[in-house]
Length: 181
Image (tube, rainbow, N blue to C red; front, side):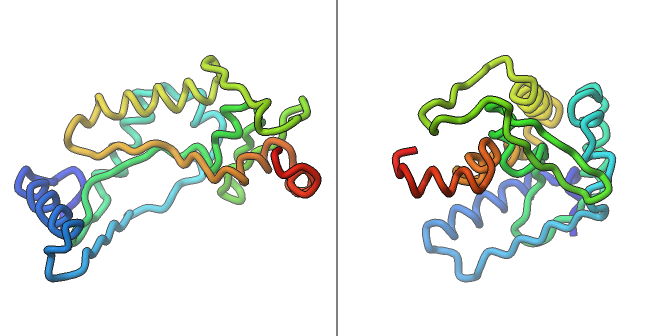
């Protein structure tokens, strides 16, 4: 067992060697990844105040304390990715992001404007959620450097995102009526 933030240079070299050999079909065993968080996601992490208003430095210190207790075994390595809800691309495109610490989830409500088809989607580089995810991710890379593999938030599946932008029923009717939607 290794705690995520106590990974040594030799640990990184071992992981690189074993994963490279596995992908090349040269490893004589299966890859075994066991990544055990000591704590589950806390309700405070699923609040708009935490995700949008907490200073980035404080968020990273909070996640640092969580990583310090995370246990990794076998072929696992230290990794972290921000969580803004599976399918957060819908929020990037104008859907309203809702958080609930009571039911421990994040979901998206279609924007007031109607979606006339996937071709009508536009990127807003000033979207508050896009900027927050980008800022937090960049800060995490700078904060942990080469000690932690930083991933990107769960963007979501294409149909899930479209459903969040127009409701599931509307999406199904659009796909039935116009498969090019």
